[in-house]
Length: 81
Image 1 (tube, rainbow, N blue to C red):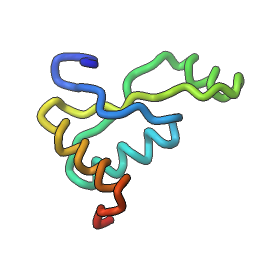
Image 2 (image 1 turned 180 degrees about the horizontal axis):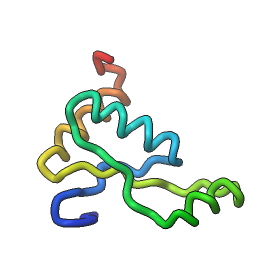
Image 3 (image 1 turned 30 degrees about the horizontal axis):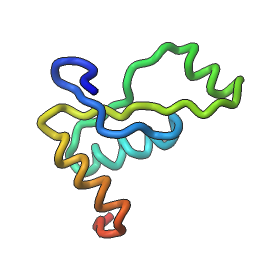
């Protein structure tokens, strides 16, 4: 899924905290990353309503494969961090 001309969805995190952790990890490894913009009310509803709403993590198109590899390495336990 493409969000704008330069950024593309890498992964959907289960919540804001997981998305922040993923973004921080990717940025530490040199991959620009950010959470998809959403309505400020959506975050409040996640907290108030207690609903699990996925949060999209975006990277520039040129970093998509590198981001996928880094997350795959984490899942398989082969990351050096």
